[in-house]
Length: 196
Image (cartoon, rainbow, N blue to C red):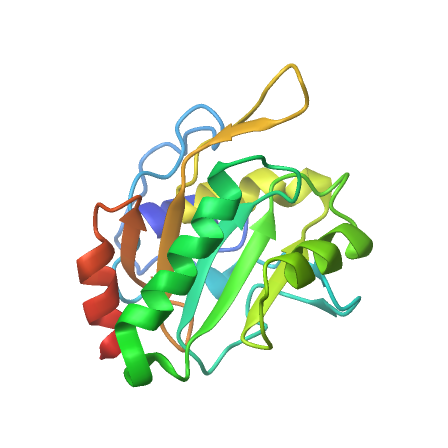
């Protein structure tokens, strides 16, 4: 069983396994987060998470089904890492060139309690984002499900901020994770995959 299939099974949304295939005991998502991007046959769109976007629209993780999508997590009051993440994603799109013209971006908030529509819209405007970008907040109870699915480590600090990894995952038109970058590690491979 792949790690994404295992995560989806833990979250209660995976399809049943083939006959004769047994699963290992399912670990707690928080105790043992997902560690790697899924093999090509798994879709993160299997996780049903309602999102509320910066434009006030409600949609799911599959809002841009049919397009390659760069996905990550952020929060609007982040002082440094999240603004850098956004600039990094812009750089990835620029470096991929015209081949990435069909690509979209979905950034899901890890602070949905404070990241309401107004906060998301303000961040969208201040960062100079365009119609290819979605900033969205899940229900607070499902934030960690998204983090586990994308293998993003998130820990809330006593000051209300978040310590988190800066991961960007490229998913295919049908939601299959196909490349991943954490910081500069994996960036070239992600750009190559995006150009395809």
